[in-house]
Length: 114
Image (cartoon, rainbow, N blue to C red; front, side):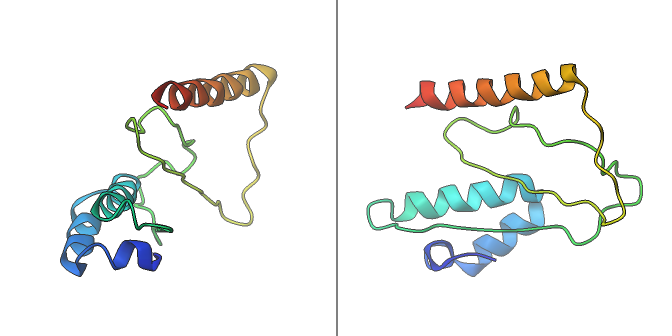
């Protein structure tokens, strides 16, 4: 799902190629960046949402999301939802502190780029 700020700037073939050749977590931010570069001065809304409908059987779906792999200058957000009957993991104090440290580090990296 994407806004006209994305589909009006990128040819359909480019969107199809990126979504076919790359994992979603790489393809979607790349499409947004390409659309922004195409018409940065006129661009007011470049939004894209993508999801995988079915995970591979061997895939570990309990993995968390990390900002460590996000390239400089790229904004990306990933929302993941578990099955309704899944209970969230209990976080101990150390896990909470690690999460806070990772968020603070991502904020620091973003601020340093500005």
